Image (cartoon, rainbow, N blue to C red; front, side, top):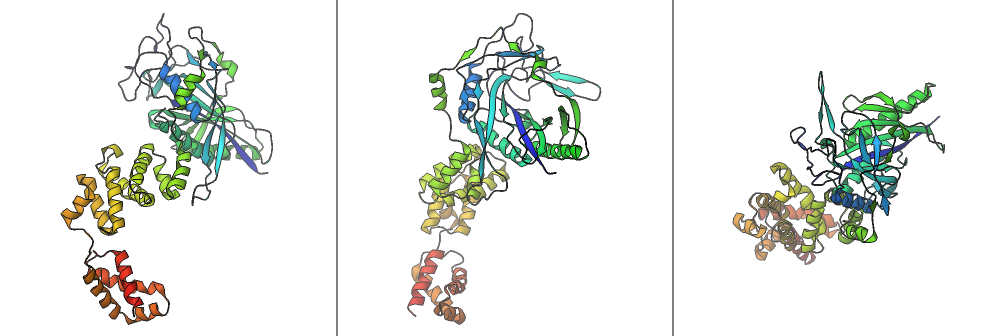
Length: 483
């Protein structure tokens, strides 16, 4: 019997705010342990929570970007459980009235043709709700220490429908979701810093069966690659259990990305285990149309929409857009440069994705630190198109631009890299090349157009590489036509 997987993801994304969800104390990563705390975070007697408006703005914005319905009213609930990383012994969350309902995440299906863009699929969302993060347990050989710096940080939980069919689709989903959150300025989604964390619910069923199988939740998937690997492992494990005559039990399993193995942690909790009830210290939130309209006006173009536009507006191929679009800053940089040299967007894209990124990597610089601005690239592309500088010399110009920040015209003049423009001398070189290559001449006259290339090498050699290839081609054809 063949089986198919059904996968749903629960993704926790820390919202990028200056202060915590219900307290004034700041947020951050890498600070000394237990320094980003205050009486509210530590749940000292008598303290009361106050909502963070910036966090509410950003979850609504996230919902708008993902096409969710924004609830006109949402409320806060207490999710009760006892664990050392939770100072209050309850977490302020949203249960039956989340802020965002429905929506979806667009993904590019793995393995699809990428000549333009691959086949796409929309993964529907169940909900997005807002809550506060918990502290972090640091385990050592004989003890575990608690750092409450993370506790109270605004946290979105983005819950997908069980609509993913493979580990590769899950990888594509997380990649797309991460790009959207970064584009919107909602989160940096750095999984190494805990800003984005994922749990995967995995089940299998006979191919074509409408009934869902028993789901198993995978925890501690602390990179997008580990999510993919963990799901692959769990699908194989469940199939092996069923084919051996066993039964899948609903449980939570810990996946170790280093060893590729998983182990059972506990049987799965149900919602009633958390004893949800409305938080008596917080009022419900009303979201009116004016609030949504203000945030909708701040929403950026989504990555896949930008990729489609780049192809249609600039005729830039997938090989370039797939590098530009995931980085909002880089794609904006490209667009500034492309508009300075109309019709030359592909050349601009090639210089950015190949040469600029290479120089940034070598210098360990960010784009903001680079001395090469869009104006530099546009000017270089224009000079190449005019025949002022040849492609191989332009490579040298680019390296100099990255180091000096000089405009390409100044570098060409300083280094003597201007292409040869003496037409009488060029014509003489062309005549000599034709006279020295009788076979290429005969082939060209016989209709073999590519034979003209046999003359170009000697001409370029005579010019020491400074002749303009376009002018060389035009001159050769003119001379050959007269013979």
